[in-house]
Length: 260
Image 1 (cartoon, rainbow, N blue to C red):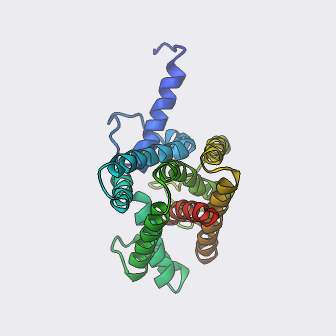
Image 2: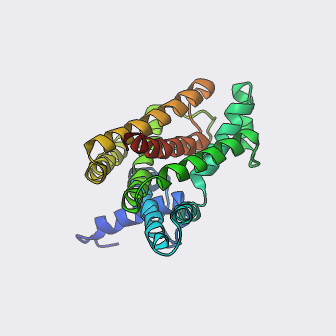
């Protein structure tokens, strides 16, 4: 029988956070993490913190590269660092969702296209435009502001898919071998609380007006893409969640740039 200690709860939560890191990124974590559907459900509350970690990696590369290389190159390297850290997890979802929603004339056909790992015209255009707009927006800021946007933008945008999962149904059929993404009410509240703290940090970095503009941009683009797939599919898929995160991140950068 394992004896409980005052630190057992903390160690367990660290393990759940590591599970969230393992699910959303390619960053190294212990390979012997305890796994269960319940623990994966609990891990959802840490998605904004995982985004914060990814953004910090990008910001570190950005500020280091900016001391040695031209500013546009530093921005591109910072973006590459975040793509390597996540394995382009959300970007892949954006491309697949764009292919399905753009090329599928019916709900069933759209869902079928999203299962195809090959990228099509709609996916390539959506992904290319999203990356190009992120680069153009970040390159317009001073290094310190761009670094803050990277850190907080990645963190805040990870809440968007959590909010979708908390409020809407899954679009595909599920069975014994597959469980739809889900979040508990407590997990949703924890993710929201973390996001509100990150929003306060954004206000300190950009000022209240800049933060409000950035958050409005994030909410607007995330809502627009969610409205699109919820109407077409009657719910969300994993690819749709990736697209939602990408649009929230891009919208945050563009909102901040519009205020600037």
